[in-house]
Length: 367
Image 1: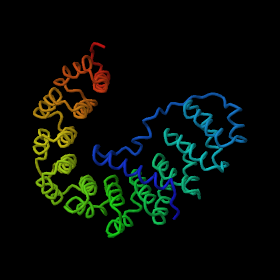
Image 2 (image 1 turned 45 degrees about the vertical axis):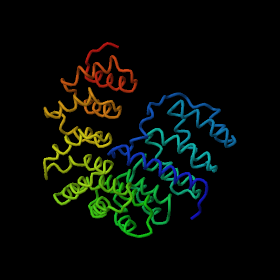
Image 3 (image 1 turned 180 degrees about the horizontal axis):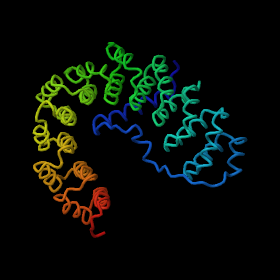
Image 4 (image 1 turned 180 degrees about the vertical axis):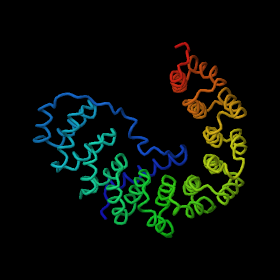
């Protein structure tokens, strides 16, 4: 395996992304969680002859400039032209520019690019292909990724594991359990493997998830993700394991336990544990508890607690979490306080979120 500048950059990108997702946000079931943030609106206009000529005869810098323009215009015909051009493109930098464009827009026709890019011999193109395949999940790509997984090592292998997890694939479960158990497997790889099982919930990952969560000598990231993954396997035994972790009283770890507790409601009165955590002095524990209370938001005591926190908690992330809880169904108790935020808050993010909630439910307020 050849390692170059791109390999090093990829490693740090994975590490920073992972640190952020594990420490400061909850996992998501949305396969396209970041890709769809960009507008998917495209326009229909005749193809520009200059674009065709540039793709045929232009230098790499001229081509990448044209691709950048297409990314801004989001023109349907021009995007189709790029897809048709891709099989004939030889320059890796231009290929990567095209791949990155379709990583931003979930454009169904781009699946043909994924298939070609996953067979590319250039390592830098392959890395981008692994990311792109998560945007366009397909059983055909899963097979290719699973085959690549056993050939690659290091940060590239971790990137593939990440992508397979995002796709909720289960094809590599046996192999990943085997890798996890090896002594020389890196901490980053173990975290990615646990994330893989936290996404797909394959029963084959239950034991290593519990092992990761309970291992007091494990690295923090490994334990955090072990707890998140264990949330996919609700049982009385696993609930007792989570209880023992709470008794360790490690805020960052407790926060993850609180977040997954709703999955264990058949085995205990977990609502009481979550309410208790929502009063914790530690902001991270409090935040995860607030998010976990979404399943109980119509209960009177929970509603009162959320209203109190909305009025008294100065942490932006907690206020946003409470507003998010009211996005689908707006509590009448909450309405006056959310109106006040929408009309008077000095925090633009909170004001805009409050207004979005009110607008969705057609509530009148002063703009």
